[in-house]
Length: 148
Image (cartoon, rainbow, N blue to C red; front, top):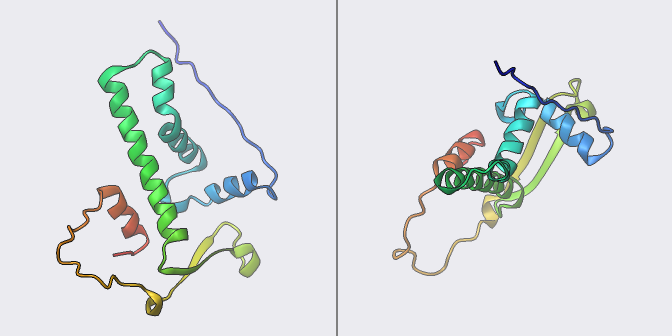
């Protein structure tokens, strides 16, 4: 009978480094994604799973489907980053650690200022443009941030 073999790893980083800041942030359970090991495994799965299953000999439709799934997850993450930090309607985005402004070091807040007066609109006729249909993942991300 085959025993279940387990693989584990541990990561330690100095808090003053970007690696340490990421680990500290992920400890705060952002977006209710779960605890740190779950978030790390989700990230690894999305980023590396097509390569891992290909190295184990998986190919064809199963590999194609895994690659599509990974790409969709990574595109959703890129869209989230773009919307929060690069979108033209966001004037400023500042992450304030409550250790600096309050009592709880585990809570983090995203403070953004939306400048509606500077929103640009197209001067040309837009009647002929097709309506953009957002993927379900983007709609879920938008719901997280109350973006319509």
